[in-house]
Amino acid sequence: MKTHAAILYGRRQDWQIEEIDLDPPKEQEVLVKWAAAGLCHSDQHLRTRDIGASGEPVEVAEVPEPRLFPMVGGHEGGGVVLEIGPGVRSVEPGDHVAASFFPICGRCRMCTTGHSNLCDLGAATFVPGQISDGTSRYHLNGQDLNVMAKVGTFAEHSVVHEASLVKVEPDLPLNVVALVSCGVTTGWGSAVYRAEVMPGETVVVVGIGGVGINAVQGARMAGAKNIVAVDPVEFKQKSALDFGATHALGSMEEAIPLVTELTRGQMADAVILVPSVMFGDLMADALTLTGKGGTCVVTGVAPQSQTECSINLFELAMWQKEVRGVVFGAANPRFDIPNLLDLYKSGQLMLDELITRTYRLDQINQGYQDMLDGVNIRGVIAFD
Ligand SMILES: NC(=O)c1ccc[n+]([C@@H]2O[C@H](COP(=O)([O-])OP(=O)(O)OC[C@H]3O[C@@H](n4cnc5c(N)ncnc54)[C@H](O)[C@@H]3O)[C@@H](O)[C@H]2O)c1
Ligand SMILES: [Zn+2]
Ligand SMILES: [Zn+2]
Image 1: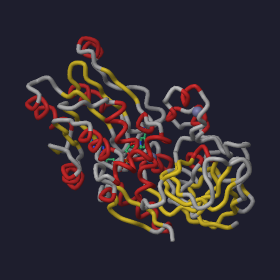
Image 2: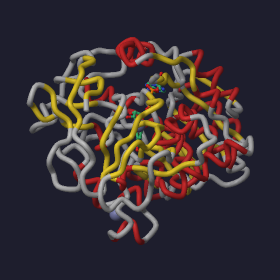
Image 3: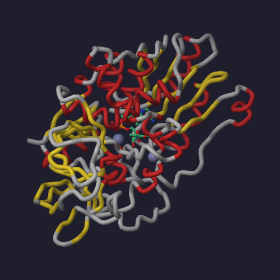
Image 4: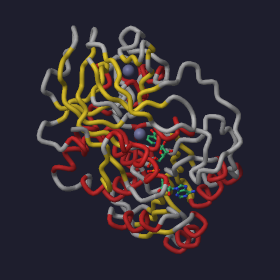
């Protein structure tokens, strides 16, 4: 069939809307019609992975990227199943689904020990070809297209492996479902599962975008006493207060005296780093903010070549601090996506309020510009 998709041809280029050829689903594959796709910063990294949040080029070594482009973008999506291929058992036509930006095989060591965000299938995320047989279902002028996170939600339709889909209740708005498929789960899980926030704790969240705002929500729901939101953009600071932050400031430097005062010098139990682009030099202030026995969680994605950071190793040991990376909120998407949507239904998780602006697919470059300009908590593409 023919469908429209936003395609990236290479670094530092705009998204191009193209009519592409999509093959029917093969073994264990599903044809999905997306209703909504979220504009997560991770797709922006694809476009300018070595460019700082300010738009200034950062000197980094070129990362070899065999056959990465051209690529259909997008990994946050909510949609409806149109057709299933042979052997599909988990969904049927008409079902509503969220994309899972890492697939979940359900059988590997990580899946079977409750860490399905680390499923072995995730290792091939950027390698071209379908999970089932390595061939492509997406073509443009006879050329195979790569697909972001094997889901490619910046397209009207996708053919994805059933491992990349999570069935959700049909009465949920699909724009909200789209956000839970990455940003909400990642941010909320960064606080609840990875920082293991407990009632009464002090938490600092650095970077209030579509992901960080949900770390604020996670900390709130886990019962944190102080939630200090850090973002240079005033609108983000105000939004953080609406989502449950108790304090909001423009930089970690400013947060150090505040957290010192709030905790009588004990400092934060958890610091969660979710800036647009993660850089090693952010670690010094982050670990100053992290108290004795505290945890510093790194959620934000750094340029792949970023191998150095400033950590006071004496304090790391003597204050028994922990630095933890996290992907997909350390969540189990098949449990956590429906669970978070239930918490939305019961009024405990704010999701409608995350969507600042809605765009058509052909407005995607504007959507990303608005993200970089700091005017959106989350922008969402709405398909017809
Ligand atoms: N680990 C994961 O599984 C995972 C999943 C999704 C997204 N991410 C990453 O999380 C990061 C955030 O994504 P997003 O979609 O929320 O981005 P976003 O662009 O919507 O928000 C980022 C926010 O960080 C702020 N910021 C930038 N530099 C800062 C600094 N030094 N101090 C404080 N705030 C700063 C910006 O003003 C912006 O509000 C990205 O790097 C993204 O790739 C990681
Ligand atoms: Zn994402
Ligand atoms: Zn697995």
